[in-house]
Amino acid sequence: GGGGPASNRWQMHCQDRWLARARPRIVVWPWENHAWERAFCRSARRAGVTTLGHQHTVIGRHQINYAVTGNPDGLTSVPDRVAANGPAYRDELERWGVPAERLRIGGAFRIARAGANLHDPSGPVFVPLSATPELAALQVEAARIVAASDRRVLVKEHPMYPFAFSETATLARTDIPLLRHSGLSAVIYASGTSGLEGLLAGVPSVRLLGEERISIDVLPGTVAGLSSALAATLDEVLPVLAAAAPPAPLAWDEVFAEPDMNFWRGTLGDGISPEANRT
Image 1 (cartoon, rainbow, N blue to C red):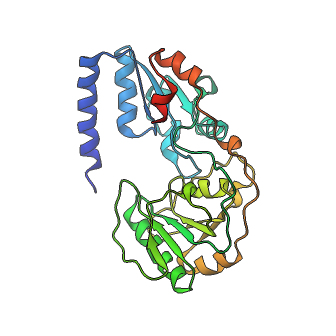
Image 2: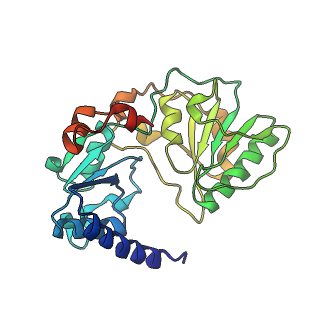
Image 3: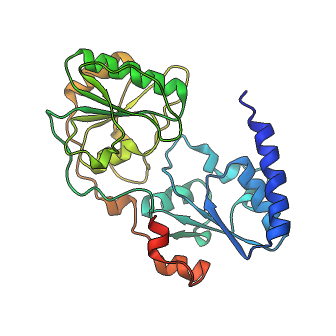
C-alpha cells in the first residue's frame, strides 16, 4: 500500500479540528466522493455547516468512487449540494445516485472550450501522461513504438506527477497543453481529461489499455457516440492509429457549461468575482 488509510485518517483529524476552529458558514471543494470527503460531509452536517461539492473533473463508467451506493450511509456522506461542470456530468452524477434535487450545473472552470478543429493528419501524436506511474510507463512505451514508425510524438508529463524519459529525434517532451497546439494527428491517453479534450477538438483519441492497471474510461456515457471511442492495447496502437478517423463532431455545450456566476455568487456571497474564479 501507499499509506492511503493513514493519510486519510490524518486528513479527517485535521479537517474536524479546522471545522471546530473556523466554524465556516459553507465549504466548497473539488468533490470526488473519496473517503476523507465522506467523513467531512458527516462532520460538517453535525456542525451545521453547509457543504457544496464541485464536480471539477471527468466522470466515466469506471469511476465508482462517485457511486452513492458505495457509501455505507448513503446520502449522509454526500454534500448538501453538488455543482456539476456541465449537462453530461450532471446526468452522469444522477446515474451514480446523486438525487436530481441536490444537483445544479455550476459550470466548468478547468476545461477550456476548443477554439478550432485541431486535427492535422501530418501533425504529431500527443501523449499526455497519466498520474498513475504504471500507466504513464505504458504510455511512454507506446510513444516509443509510434516514434519508431517515423511519426512525430509529443509527450507531456502530468503537472503533478513528473515522469522521466529520454527524448529521440521523433519523440520530444512538451509542456504545452493539448488545446494550445496548432495541429495534432492523434491523442493517446490513459486517464484524465485529455482524451475528452481531444475529441472535442476533433482529434482521434485512443485510450491505451494496460494489463495491470485500469485505464479509466473518462467519457460520459450520457453523450451519444462516446461509448464507441477508440481503445487499444500496446500491440494494437500502430494499426488503430493508422485506421483512426476524425471523431464525429462533438459540441462542447453537450458536455460542459460556462461558469454560472449568478449561482456561485448566490451560493457563496457577493464577495466573489468572475475574475477571481478564472485564475
